[in-house]
Image (tube, rainbow, N blue to C red; front, side, top):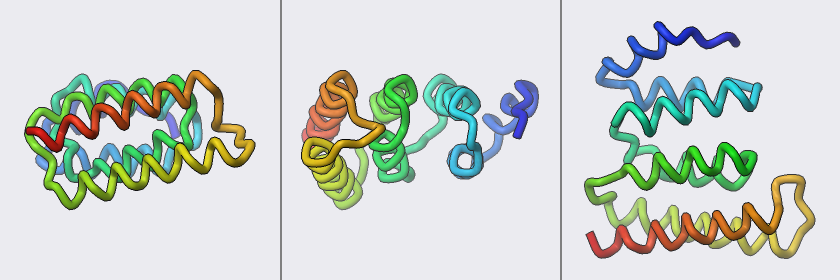
Length: 129
């Protein structure tokens, strides 16, 4: 799937932009294209709070580079995330980090583990918002 920049600019203007972008991420097989989609999510100011769990799931399986993009998305969630979703995301990330430590995974590296722990720390700060 080739992603057209002008098309992405139009998507950012739609009320369901976050839903469209997460669907495109889910359907896109090429890492570089997903990187671009993640970048659009955080750089455009689109409200992605509803998809926090989706992004945490992706952080666990994506490349380190895409994990950085996902961190930027989560970091940009300025308004409080509902506590139920936040608790679920924290548990998902904690479980994922623990599984990575127990199993050899192609998605695991010390660098990524440190970054995922930073993401976990960020999520914990949301409890105070």
